[in-house]
Structures are given as C-alpha cells and as structure tokens.
Length: 234
Image (tube, rainbow, N blue to C red; front, top):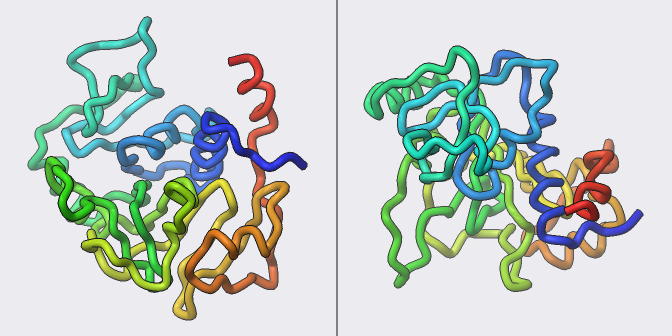
C-alpha cells in the first residue's frame, strides 16, 4: 500500500478517520483548519449535530462558491452551510452549551501534544495571535477530545514527551489522529492503536518524540476507498 503523502490526501484521510469516531446523535464542535473538513466526511446514515462557538448548531458541509452565504461562517470565519432545522443563538448561549458539558466530541488541531494528554494549540511565543478562542473551554467541557493534525511540522515531531509551548489545557486529550496512525492517550502514555497504510512501526516512532506503546490489538488504519481516485481527479 502506498504511503499517503499528498497534502490534500493527507488532510482528507485524517478528516475521514475522525468522522468514524462520531456516533448518531453526537453534538460535535469542529476547530478551524483541518478539523473543519470533518463536516464533509460524516456519514449520511447517522445524525450528527455540528456546533460552532459563534452560535450555531446544525453546520452542514463547507460552503462552495455556489452555496456561499456571506452571513454564514464558522468560528474561524470560514464559509459554511446549515442543515435543515439548524438553530442560531448568541455566543453566550453557545459557551453555556460548551461549559455545561453538552458537547460530546470536540475536534481540534494542535501545535504540540504530549504523552500526558497536555495540549498546546494557541500560541507560539513571539508571534501575534488573536487569542486563545474557545479551545480552553472546549477541551475541558467536551466529553471526548480528539486532536486531528499532521504528524510533524517542518520535519519536527509534534507528539512529545513534554509540551514546550504554553498549554491550552492539561491532561485533556483522549485521541490523536494523524496521517501516520491513531494514538490513544492512556495513563501509561501514548498507545498506538492503528497504523496507517505503508507506514512501519520504526517510521512512526522516528517522527514521534514520545515513546509509543504498541497496542496488542494494533490494527491497520482505514482510509476512504476513493482517497487516491478523488485526488487524481482534482
């Protein structure tokens, strides 16, 4: 099996795998960037309520030029669509939902995650940022925290023994999904539970600073059946 390296393929592969973690009836918050692509990969056979911090439950797929509405965006300002029956409300009510524990799953990107489940995803010291946003509320308020990201940045590991950047939250990450595999945070550290097609154990460990625990039930990471076909068509 060919290792997935194309940027577009990598992002879709991760988003699709995240979507497999979502269950019928879940209220789900998707972060900006790669996590927002999960909206395009959810199964039509189940009902998932996608929530946005700026006041919407019922996000549909990302908007195209044909479906774009300038007044309908997610918390990151990306154009989105709304499903039939979507509900709009103010930001205060949105954070009441989040802080009240009513979000089943939140999916975020990350700058760093460490073996203790600590998350750093809001600032690189010395660089201008608009602020932490809703991430610190989401990772504490949601019942399950999934980090969806590319495994490295400029060839450097993002899965560490200890985060070096300022934390968004401590001990909150449950699952990490990258183009190299699926990793669960356990009391003993990072456990590899799925390995991506074409990737060896030595290869994933080489790009991971933390020591990976190999699950006795390690399986192959599933990918979309049309992953390579859609990229070729594009």
